[in-house]
Length: 268
Image (cartoon, rainbow, N blue to C red; front, top):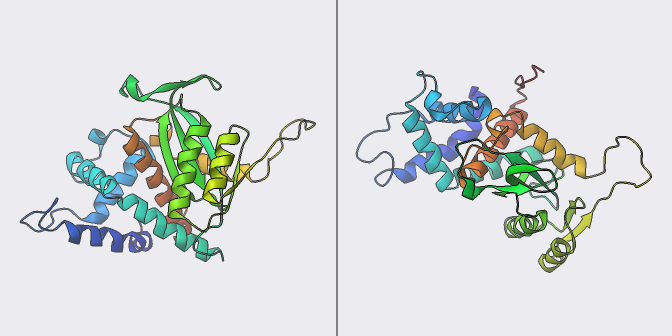
């Protein structure tokens, strides 16, 4: 990370380490590893897709890096960083810090060979065996909520849980857009939460490709996520999968705030 990007993340990570003194990773001795290098290593895994054990030796030992990753996932550090950066990006775009509308969608993804079969399923519609990522984003495409399930879980079931999470964490949200995979149950659940869920439909007379209003926002977010090779498949247990998605958004938003770019897998 550049100095500017690290400046955005440092207060949250430093505060977390201070809370751990005497009870967590740094018991009885000064911290051995620099938090910036630990975060660099975690982002390196997320971006390149390498196994933890293959981390280059100029980072901390992979066991240490993974230990921090697991601790930050457990203590909701990635959620806090996402919330902080999303608010900063929205304010930089001239928006209110808290959104009032969201867009829902789901993506089925294949899993790696090491993922236990018990955590997978088959999306019969897309003919994909693996897991499904249910996400809710604001109108800028920034992540509000994420849920990873077996691919056999319907959009309705996942959408209900994502809507509940958004309503709890973002009470200003009163409008949601979704595709035709979300039906009456999601609409009724949204109404109970005070959220008007509108299903966007493709014009039946339309020929060829045309961007569907509102839905393109969340589809673009999935495109952003897929620039991170670790998300090309699902290699994780479900809570770790959600953490990897949040890490990709941390990477994206911190770069946007500092106006930095990086080459994607197509070299652009």
